[in-house]
Length: 158
Length: 99
Image (cartoon, rainbow over all chains, first blue to last red):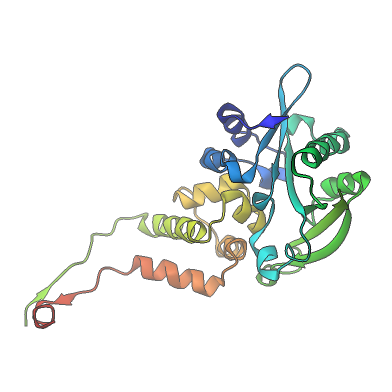
């Protein structure tokens, strides 16, 4: 795991996920944000040196409606965002992937706690987060979008 | 009274590009990334980027979602799009000279 490179960012921006996860598809326009040091994007590689996914730490792992509701101000915690290469998803590899990222973040940032914001429809991701020890501490939604669009705020002791 | 007509020519597709430009401006003004807004809107980064470039036509439902991703009222967003669409005002020359 190491800071993201421009070629990794370009590769990630081209990843395409199967429905219903296609809302996580990237775009070349987002490469600049992936390379901004303040978002702390990191690439994850396998033993062969192939890119398997990424983590980001801090603000880019938050959503705007959560910010307005103040859900990120309840306690100081490190927000974690992550994504695996599409062909590696759905194969039971998520928990190991997440644990590796948390290990790295613990050593690099010494946070008090980890926090994740996840779309409520994404049961597959939520199961992984729960297996690693995350618990749902809040749910919130965007009032205009109706009940089906909600997020879970999950937390785990560092 | 002589008036100076300043109204830029409009082309087909202007509404779409104005919507896209307005969305990008609002996002940048809030210091939000594509990922943050897309995630909050439940749309993909690729789709949002295409809308911002004026390449995709967002439905009213999608505009509502993006407003939510930007954490802005959809009515407010439509007002911003409308004001970006307004042709430049006609400036009466006499008033300008008097000022």
